[in-house]
Structures are given as structure tokens and as C-alpha cells.
Image (cartoon, rainbow, N blue to C red; front, side, top):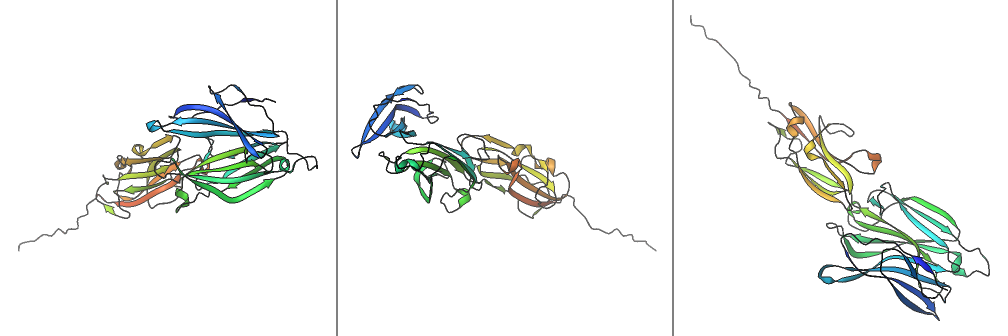
Length: 340
């Protein structure tokens, strides 16, 4: 028997592609038999080798040629095909609609698993065809470059499904290991595996991965909290770190002490917007503060960011309150002397 298989895939942006192929794995007599099938285009029809076992694993690989012509073999996808195997799809869910799925380290995400074709509990059906196993794993990214570090592992929690249907959990909290959980970067995956005993190596029936980016932070420099200034501070700046890939960040000014939810005067020089793949850093100058602080009194500067989270409402990154007192008060007395 031969299978007609269609694969479509995308190579990593900026990477030079090498040889692409499909690896077919079967178990014969307790030993794996491996075939590599070359492919020459991004989509099309490829004929497999004959299936002589009850099931077979198909893995899609590409070879990435990087700096110094170093070749790295990357697995892009994996599917299992067989007589009793169920059909499984896994989807990551997030408030951010971007693809590939992503979220923030302080926000929950969801997983939807759909299982069809699970065999009934019958003596004629192999035990491995009556359930599937789900595992959760992670990979860490570098906190500066946001690139994979090669570190990762499996979480202890795993579970088994024995029925068909669609199963959804929308309250999964990121658990990337790190000293500061809100500043971790990486990815978490939920993978559905064929139950052991199927006659093939442990293989994926479905998998979904969500990228997890750190929570942004900021600091206002050059303006001291609570200080009284005789003129509008001219050396103020803002340092921003880990701004969410899709975000708009800006500073605003208003009179009075800092209060949540106050709508102030935005400073045009501080508006920065991103729509990128990874988090961004920025340094901004408070160049137009004098236009908003035009009279003596107490002023607050806030740095706010808007992301796909929090229902689109601005979130506070930093603030500072200072007093402006440009009017010089002179206490003096006027006296006259009359000569008698």
C-alpha cells in the first residue's frame, strides 16, 4: 500500500534552506525501519514507501544553512498514519490573535484538543488504539536576544484521553522556570502522543505551541520623585524594556498626584508603536514636557502601554510626581521716614 501525502510549510525568516525531506519510520520485528524521501518544492504530492506495518510515522525535515555554512536539521511537522489511529488536532488559544500563537508571561492561555476516530472498547481493538496521552513541555529563550537557548524540558503534569470529542481549557498559566516568572521568555507545547504499544516509536498525533513573552517594564530617568523644580525639567527620559511585540506605548502628564485611570495630556515625542515578532526595547526623550506643564503646581508623568490584553485598556509601566514652582516670591517691607 502507498500513501499520497501533501505537505506545506514555511521556512524560518532569514534562514537559507538546504535539503528538505520526509522521514518515514515503521517498526518491523521490533526494530525501526527508516526511509528518507527527498522533496524539491514547498508543496505538492510525495509518494511514501509501502506500509508493511499497522502504522507508520512521517516526519517533515528541513536543513537550515546558517553562519559559516553550519547545517542544522530541523523537524517541521510530524504525523502518524495507521489502521486504528485516531485523528487529533491541537490548537493554542490566546487573547492575542497573532499567528504563531503567543501570550504574555502574566496572562493565561488556552488549549483546544479535538479527537475523532478513537476506537471503542472492544476485544478486537488493540489497547493502544483506545487512548492517547497528552504531555506538556517547554523551551527557554535568551532574555536579551529572545532566541532559543537550547534549554527545555517536560512538566510533570500529563494526562490521558479515552473518548472522542473536543476538550478546551482556557485557564492555563505559563510556568516557564526562572528567577522572575514575569520576565521569562520561551514557549510551551501540548503534544498528543500515540499510546505505547502501537508498534511504532512514540510519535505525535497533534501538537500546539504558544510563545510566552516577558512583561514590559519602564523607568523615568532625570526627574526625581517629589522634587520641586524651578523650571520644567529638561533632562527627562524613559527607558523601556520588553515591550510586547504588538503594542503602543506613550507618556502622559496631568496635574496632581498619581491616580489610576486618570486621562492626561499625551506627549507626542514619547509615542512608540511596534508590530513585530519579538519584544522590543526603547529609549525616549521627554522633549515636549513644557507644553503640558505650563503653570506652577504638582504634576505626574505616567508611562502607559496598550497591548492585545487588558481589553485594550492602557497599563501603567512607570510614573513620577514632581512640583513645578517657577514664580519667585519676595517678602519685603516698604517704610518712609519723615523729617521733623
